[in-house]
Image 1 (tube, rainbow, N blue to C red):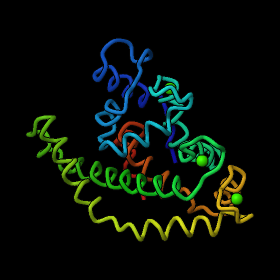
Image 2: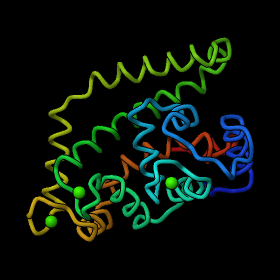
Image 3: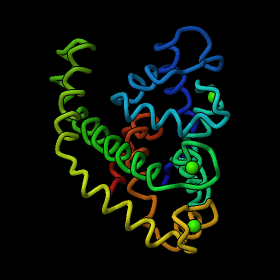
Length: 217
Ligand SMILES: [Ca+2]
Ligand SMILES: [Ca+2]
Ligand SMILES: [Ca+2]
């Protein structure tokens, strides 16, 4: 596994941010709209990823937050990932997760997963995509991910939420604390992996150079 966040990826990321914002990428303040075009996400997905990376919660992503977020997603420990996810999921910042927060995040993570699928389709469709304008390409993306989203079954999401609470809410008080969440993630490899995997796939074009694709799967 050589999923490191190295010099090549760094240069690529700098280029992308410079192209998007102009000026010195290290002085960037990236908005949710910037994230939409940087990662090829729709608004819901970009909002979630943006929130995940915004560790000082000031509403924009600075260069160090961008690097930090990408580094954790591409090579962080389970504990680091769990902490990052928890902070993102805890929308009201009260230090625990309730059902509503978990529902929202489960729903968003499906959206992100859809975007990752769409992005991975865009690669092989490169020839076609290069004939489209930026606007047409982004419309096509939105169209495909919308059609995936309309097929999301809300009852399935509710099931997934219930299951998480059943397994992780040890003292049964209807709230998942950071401790409970970390314990759950450590004893259960699959707990955050669909979510993290979805995010990782979205950032992969940046954190992973194409020549390493042969290692996948
Ligand atoms: Ca910030
Ligand atoms: Ca909360
Ligand atoms: Ca609890």
